[in-house]
Image (tube, rainbow, N blue to C red; front, side, top):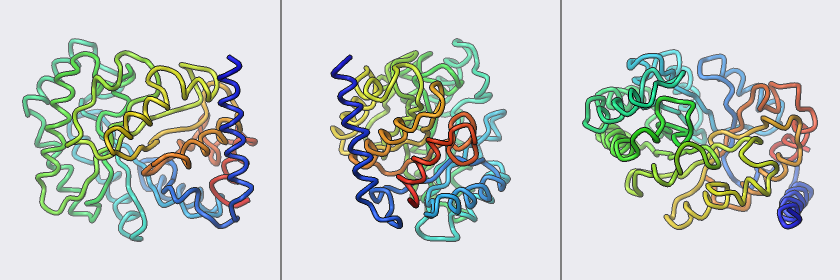
Length: 315
């Protein structure tokens, strides 16, 4: 435990030193960043308010497709229209779009039903939904969207999870990427994003192959498994394993979801995440900005909000 505590002290000290040495207008280690503020037009407006509060422009917008029915996977207008317009308004912006692989996605289907849907997807029965999504994104000028299919696939929260049939899940992912890359004009990047730690299945078991993955992400909240950042780093399937896995494959990392959760207002966690992000090759990161996770839209975390603003925005 003493060694783990020492790791955390080192990470926090590094973050604080980095913060003290950065000018008030500098970007955080040149890593593109933003927040999840909502998947519709209100979310676009909320991201603008987030940037105003931060004093630095957030250049990464993050949205999720609903997964109530299969038509949702083709991209409803209320998601694609405002976020595509946001993306095309400035060339330095990046749109990240989480896409379910199975419908209904939440609440999760039973094991045998999920396995059946994964096998259907692996056989190509659902290719047309993802091809149509790609066409709709290209038509709206969002042809360089970062697509995150089946996020947190190593857990149990969603129907798009891997454990009921990892082989079918991997093959289904490959079909999704192939279908979307076949659409003329696309320049999508695909982000494989498990949730940190050991859950229903080891996330490396679900990895579909270097040729169909561009970014290796991880959702990492201040929550179990583990208590404290040093444990988040060292635990099986934790942050160190994530970094080593990505580095071995020559892929950048990402953190599509991060924020506070089980342990309340925790500025040490924000400092440690800043240190981790800025000391690794990270393509982008987006904090989840609503309670209990957030730093601007959630007033429950004043000390963490101050830390985030000082580290990632103005001092």
